[in-house]
Amino acid sequence: MNPQAKLIFVISLLLGTTITISSNHWIMAWTGLEINTLAVLPLISKSHHPRAIEAATKYFLVQATASALVLFSSMTNAWYTGQWDITQLTLPAACLLMTAAISMKLGLVPFHFWFPEVLQGSSLTTGLLLSTAMKLPPMALLLMTSQSLNPALLTTLAILSAAVGGWMGLNQTQTRKIMAFSSISHLGWMAIITAYSPKLTLLNFYLYTVITAAVFLTLNSMKALKLSTLMTSWTKTPTLSAILLLALLSLAGLPPLTGFLPKWLIIQELTKQDMIPAAITISLLSLLGLFFYLRLAYCATITLPPHTTNHMKQWHHTKPVNVSIAILATLSTMLLPISPMILTTI
Image (cartoon, rainbow, N blue to C red; front, side):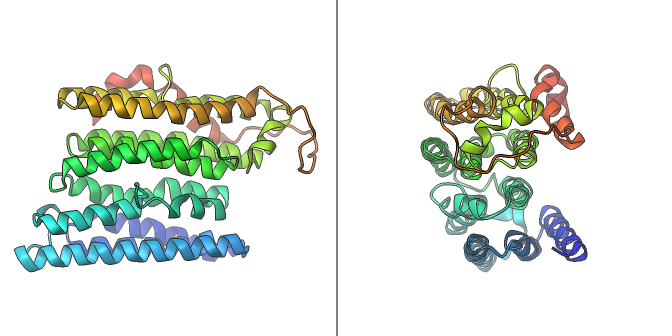
């Protein structure tokens, strides 16, 4: 892709995200979401492969539907209450429509079907963008409207997302699809606590972004699009394989690593809110995610397949680890000891 064109698209992404996050008026928030959607479409379809074109088309249709629902919900609310302010969403029907629209934008169950397909059709770097930066504007809207939305509905969507993300990730062999289902289950953790502690949702999103960026950039550096490629990568890039192992275990939420912090705090908050059944359910469902992260980590670090894999053999050469991967890997594994300091800042 032409560097100037890429620069324009990236600036548009930043502009759209900034407009949505900083707006108080529904029309401005909608404008930001539209700019974002239009800017990311060329980045998805840049390879001109049929899968990429299909992914871009699916992304456009879903995001256009979600944007129309945002507009419809906010107009209905304005019609009844005379308020265009984002925080003044009071009409129950408008709140229900807005929950559906934001769920569709984020990829929460039952509006998740587009996300794995779009990620599978994109490159790993575009996949990283879709999993992290593109989730920020709808997440900001979710946080701003969190007091108006129905907590029982959000909890139901969250538990369904954790269940579907875990179950459907189990039998995948493509790394991008595994990361898509991982994203869906993490969104469940964020959605369940939104109505009770929006700051915790934001903290969870930030840490999820850091760890997911580390995983995506490591996979991109290894050029690992499927598990069979990952299985032979430890002989060529042992350092990256070790980083991937730690980042995946952190994403699973194992205790000494950063990923444990948001899960721990969310379970603690749910217990304070007398939602012990929900806390137990979502904790057990996270074990499904742990299984496929362990499978990825096992493929990346321990085994060579006993048979010859059906992909081209690559030259054995060790590349230096990218600085951004090193920084992100450090953040995604070592932030737990300074959690008291993190908690004072949110």
